[in-house]
Amino acid sequence: MVSIKIVDPAIVEKFRQILASENDEDAVFRIKETKVGGGCKSHMELLVGIDEVEDEDQQLQVDGLPFVISEDVIDSYGSSYEIYTDTDKGMPAVRALG
Image (tube, rainbow, N blue to C red; front, side, top):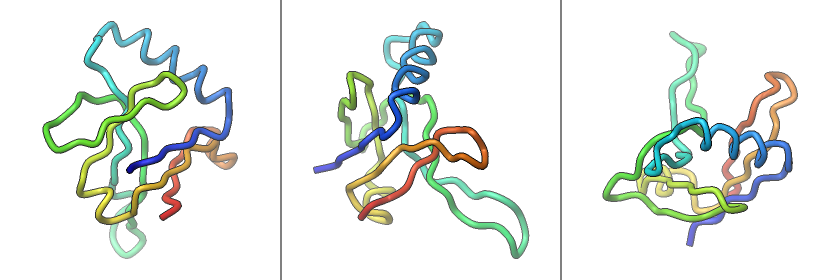
């Protein structure tokens, strides 16, 4: 079973505003893996963004918000995640807890 915890209540409120502005009842928040940087300094990071549900996704509600995560990400990072505020970037960030 997948678990996602949002540690900062301000993130929940911001995500609610983003979802309301989408005007798309199929919109969900997706935890995904993405390549950051280039060359020998590139690395993979987990991010959260707006998307739509795909066939192989795990779906769950977190604080009343719809989230999805692909089986590939779960296989790579585990089934437990935390969304927190990255103080360096001032943006929500995701970390795998296992």
